Image (cartoon, rainbow, N blue to C red):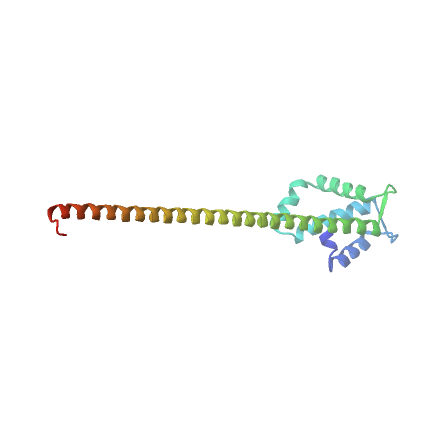
Length: 173
C-alpha cells in the first residue's frame, strides 16, 4: 500500500476510498472495507510485474483466500469500533511506506557494506601478495648476490691455483 500512496496514487487511493464509502460518512464499514481491500489487491495485480504477481498469488490463490486477506487487513486497521477512517487507513499505509523505505535503505547499506568489506579484504590480500612478492624478489636478489660472490671467490681461487701451477712449470712468471 505504501507504494500506492506515493505521487499521483494518493489521489487514486482517495478516489477509490470515496467510491467505497457508500454512505459518505468518511468511514468504511466492514463490508465496504473488505470490498475496498479486495479491489486494492486486484488493482495491484494489474500494475505489477510478472514476478510480483507470482509472489502475490502464492498466498492468495482463491477467492476465499482473498476474502480472508481482506478481513485481516480490515481487522488490523480497525481500532475495535467496526469501521476504518481515511486517516486510520492513510496513517497505517504511510507507516508501511516509511517502513519499506527504511527496510530498502538497510538492505542497500548491508549490500554496499558487504562490498566495501569485500573490497577492503581484497586490498589487504593484494598488499600481502605484494609484500610476499617483494620478499621473494629480495630473497632471490640476495641469493643471486651470494652466488655471484661465491663464483667470484671460486674464480679467484681457481686463478690462484692456476697461477701456482704455471709458476711450478715456469718459475720465471
